[in-house]
Image (cartoon, rainbow, N blue to C red; front, side, top):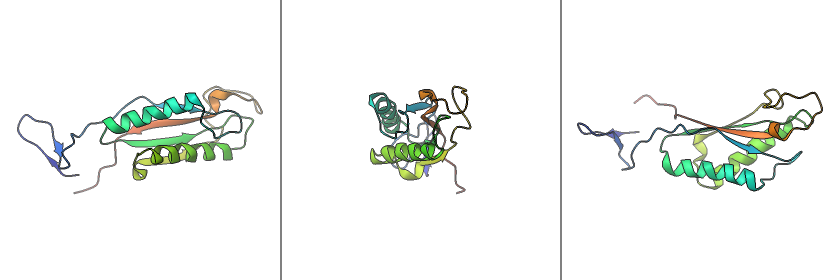
Length: 135
């Protein structure tokens, strides 16, 4: 990105929008058992992504899917893709969204095998700086 700067002023991208670093807190999109559907609580979390998209000019979004110990790891993948698709459909540039899934290997609430736990049926949305390219 080409930046223009004047003495005492913050750099401004050539596009005219100020370059704003973005480091909002993570967002958590929870799911019902064996579901990829968004309920009201999930939509509120996703609205937060939209809020930051309109305020941050340089943010990479990392979407990580999880499932609880009673579900197939495929659910974590399906949830991560559903969240990515929603974010992109609502205006976030696809090239700024990274997707991964970890199954039940990184649970928010430790449980025994086969245990259902809503807090573990989640997609975590983290924000970070865009990778820099050499000029």
